[in-house]
View 1 (cartoon, rainbow, N blue to C red):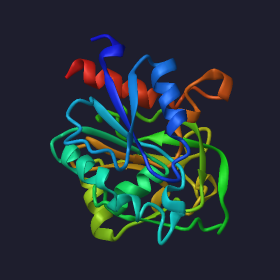
View 2 (tube, one colour; view 1 turned 90 degrees about the vertical axis):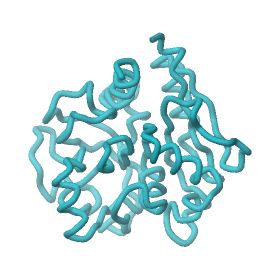
View 3 (cartoon, rainbow, N blue to C red; view 1 turned 90 degrees about the horizontal axis):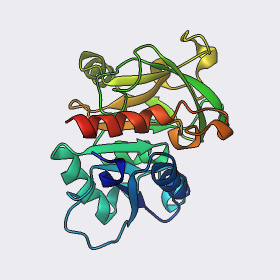
Length: 238
């Protein structure tokens, strides 16, 4: 399958600000046919798309809670139906927060333990490569990506964590450059250094770091590109 035949949908809410970053990377770097889906678009379903990306930003100005209002926007009912039907959904940063608020992923996001907006490069240890988002990544690979968030402190009950561990749902953890997990490599206080998780069927993933900002050499890292390469590979091989 030609990459141009792969269609990606990018949801857009008031306050989204990484939608064009994702659009450019998918179209210009990976040759995917990506298009925007305005949150109020009167679309019956999302079946024409091979995968959906919920990008980062500050949807609705993070009013109430980050992602809370966007999770109740009309397009998210379509995203839910798409995900429950096995469709591939990637939520990046605010997109991760929206997936949590929409109930497509378990857990919550708290304010960073620094109580500050954190914007810097971090390292991620890849724990599960048996997903549509990591099938082109070697297990235990250390990937460099940037973060940019105020509420990225992942928290969940012991029951949820046990479920994630049982189903290999913890896909990425914050680590140092050599792959070691430590409190010092955790930029936000996230429980167990968790940076990215997937649902039980592995077709929905939330990731706090930004792969779209680390998919080109000129940006200082191409490691984020492995996420998009994995999705493309998975779609071509399924």
